[in-house]
Image 1 (spheres, rainbow, N blue to C red):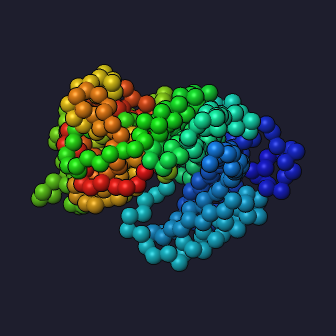
Image 2: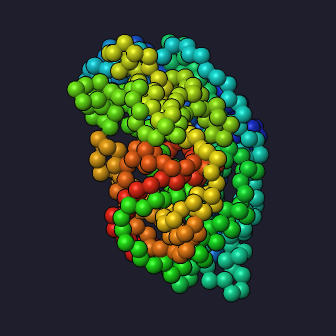
Length: 463
């Protein structure tokens, strides 16, 4: 018996491995949707997750929780009309109500000129290594123990620090099936620890974080120590004149800006003149050099550091895609509808991003910098010009001046106006990579990066 077939099943009957919906149960639900459907075609998507979190603030544990949810999305297609209806009640009665409601709404929907048939069988890779059993079944006391790597030093006599952090583990599964015979299933786990430390005089702030597939891969002590060190070192910042500076961005800061790029790789936007990759007079810049030749940007669901599902939200298979190869725009994202119009091969929508690193360490970059700025991370980024991929935002939680090859002092945060394209064009060195502590969709591998002429436009009083 499974709770995913009938939500009224008593919890005592649940199996230990029923943390998220199994492949067998997902297939059973999807088959029932297809069997009940009276539409021309139907697609069902099931997302199932269980997350455990512990939050602390003001040097005290504040909240702890476990969130479990399973949703079913039924998409019905009638002629050129379609609709989607969502439920998280997987009882047989609810599934049938959801199918009928999707059909009723589809009949009322306007025709969609870009509508395509649901996918038939696809060839998908098996990425079973994305699941870590220990992380999926982690006990609460293990999570709270990790929080003590920050709480204990902050509470120590003589400490003048206040810590706030978030620890979260997740187990999730997704299944997609269609009436044309496509079925895809994937499950994975994740663990994430982020910490912000403030000095009690209100002038210093430090941040650090790690993200991994398995809880055991996180180094909680190192994360806590780094955030504390940055907070103490960033006390009493001084103002420097805004302008163009050589910057050394730590991997999180690189990911904050470069991680915005995938949305611009859409071939349709470029072909229609709505993207930085649009060519004057029509077409796109595929095959042109767009950034420094040192830059290689890819997505790969099978990369061991960022294993993700081998298909996108529509069920399209994902393979390794090289967006930028040696500085040249080498691939563009081609949606199915645009591929059908232009007789192109459709690509899947990637769910991770990997910027290849180099052999220059952060310390070597600092030692080789006469005058520059070291940035821990960026925040509050907002697009200012989609045609140049330009954004404005602020530095945060540890910004330092480099003079004569050394970190000389803490400086006030600054607002910047910059484009990831300009940043990658001005790259001078790349260093070791790591998986960033994701605070948005998708996972990333980013290096420490040194670039010239980063455009700081004004000072900020924000700490």
